[in-house]
Image 1: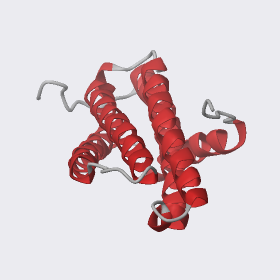
Image 2: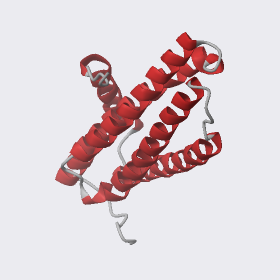
Image 3: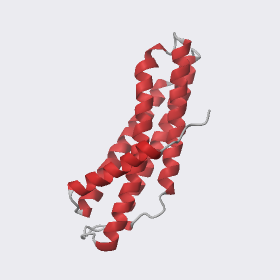
Image 4: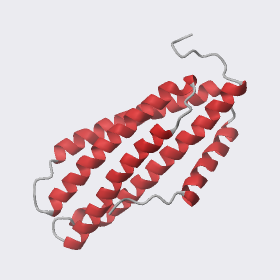
Length: 179
């Protein structure tokens, strides 16, 4: 048995782990929704930032929202109070991923603002940060899979939890960035 063990998780501990997984899934869902909004804006406006002031404003607005959302993601992640010992490696891995996301999002926002003003955007630095963020995300996703494997619950049960977590975010999440 390793540091966190591989014994079967059941009873009260399993309930705590499933409750934690649902809370964590809500945070990941929120982050994904915000990333999708940013990506859609960049598809629409990204190639016109330097030439079109209207596109530049929209791109800056989207990048600013992304940066604020990244801070909100970390806040929500840290707000999860009950982290079962069996989930601690996954919880930490998601913290690292969300922190890397926030670092990248703020650098991206500054780079887009610079581009909109016709200045150097330091894109190499932003590319380095996106690589770090993507690596951290993959590692968190791997920890997520290991955690779920240890829970030994059906795929159907996991799908129900994910559906509940994603529907809560879609209908009840009225978060908006500050102007």
